[in-house]
Image (cartoon, rainbow, N blue to C red; front, side, top):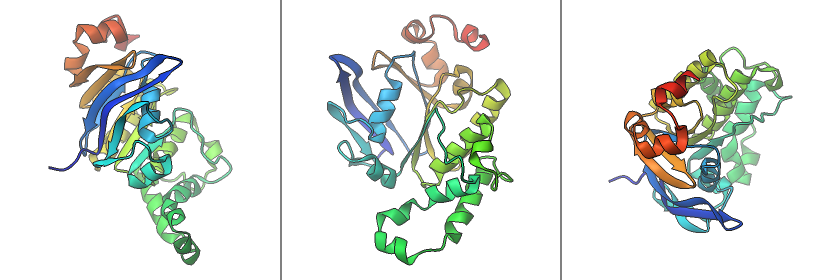
Length: 256
């Protein structure tokens, strides 16, 4: 049996004596598309930082493809197959859209300095970057300066840069934030296609309507603990989830 792409085992961390993540355990198989939701302060961002290596847990462990990476660096985890996008997009604004992705696509060169010196051409990376930009709906924008893009396209560029790392799993931190309804729907459709192309997705997002539409599984956090895990419709029917996260019906929340 193949190891999960990502497995968390009793992961915990506290700040000032307050548990931000409290004994969290779950696993994602290859090809999963999972939404991670919860109220503000539930521990979602802290959990993502623990998974990506930005933070080190007080206890528990993180496994990528069966390997314990709990004490390993973020750079090592990227090489192992994890990529992270950020809610606040920070591309190299004075570089072209294409060059932003080419730079990410060349990440393997930095692992071996000798290889980086020998291989000076970037044709392979450019070809890969063009393909990725087409995949995320930015074909035709290659020569534009990244800083000139509107927010929706900047968020697509952020995903393109993550995909250029050839990840097995992508952690998406609020990729729909700041987008209008039509932009959000188009964005989630693109992410769904990325998942269909074989990339495992863990999505942190407050746009519940789009999360329920796209994700096949929801994990709900409250006060640092998992209080729901299952199919979106089943999870959102649970009284504990409604009380902690919504305080109202799913239908009412989606209309607001």
